[in-house]
Length: 578
Ligand code: FUL
Image (cartoon, rainbow, N blue to C red; front, side, top):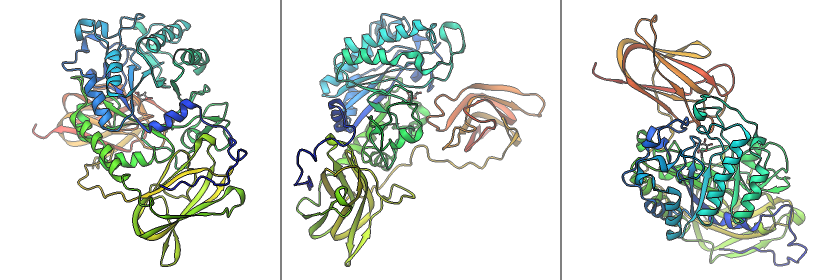
């Protein structure tokens, strides 16, 4: 490890450059990886979003073991756990005093159980930090959308903030899909973001849990951490931990930050180890591969962010063995990649600034030719995030050859650093490496540079979410209706829809599925919602009782945006023997 702290730095130089992190944010940045756990009634109904009328009797795990969750997360390198105390369906995983829609109305432990408590205790035993996700959108509550619900929400939050010990984060999901059960009203209730009265709720959190970071979405109220604009598990290669003081944050600010932002609000990269957030047996073969997880690591922790990686819980109350083994393999691989800093005995020559005050860098000369494919650089962010652009070159036969970040397409160069930037490139062998800062907001303060040789990943399993090819012939009978015609009758059992990947335009959020054998009589075989499809555009599976027919028809009942349904891919399952 090479420390490049400017030797001539005086008090003036160490003055903050723009916004700086709070002590909570500094501590958070050091956590680097922590886990999400999604578990609720959805686990028992095979859904991603519950409607709010699911029966609490469904919650009856045979083998619930929060210690298993904590052990798995710890071995996977996670420093803490954020738990879905309440998801959008409104079902509480703790026996809240303010509703019966909770574990107390379930058969589990005869209604005397408390998952939040068991998890908080398990985290303390394993030395993990603990936190909660409390969904503001509540599809069960009769008063949702009215002031009474906000009081209810705060009462629940107070229970969680005061009865379970210290929390490191509070996660308020921004989703609101509109419709819900709402105590039997079965209607749409869209709210304006000011409805929740966040400033008052934030004040309560600051008072009751002064060390907790507040995560908040793109709304006007700024928390301590921001969403990164996607659930696919990566943040921008340019990533400023700064955002503007006011206004709604669009994708670009969420994903790349704002170089001139007045507030320090770093991005937290959240994604699931499987395509969905909740457990679905159908995804057992789609647990992310080791190379996909490493890619996620480089594109989050390696881009000045922290990684929030989700592990879903199975209906029996445990993490699936495939997920836990993959999690442990992930941690082992990170340790393996970063175990030997090849620059630790190298000679370092500081470069005087080529770009005036805001330049600098270093030439690293190895004792003998070194072979490597990763470069790590860190700024001392206590004094702000400063570097805007840098370059990396290796000496090949006396010529300086630039290295590019192979995980970034179409880039004109290397941009921000922040807490940590990891650059990945094909393996090179050289005696000299040159790191040059080309532009910075103030004099750069680099606290570490190092180089590593990452091993090749062999025997990898396929990536989740990979496009599966299908040779279906389908046609659109109108902008919101699509048909597939089979010449021979088939017994259909499932239909799968992959929405377009980089746009909301044409994404189907509500559907109905029809079957016919003669183009005249149509039977509705399924209908419903593709929940969370906008933020997490993964394959959506519609299952239904085996249905004999020749033609299938998918109607888009509602689109996220636009007037024309869009399809990235489709799959149909039918029985091979009639
Ligand atoms: C989303 C939610 O709608 C998903 O269900 C999930 O909880 C994810 C982490 O956040 O916005």
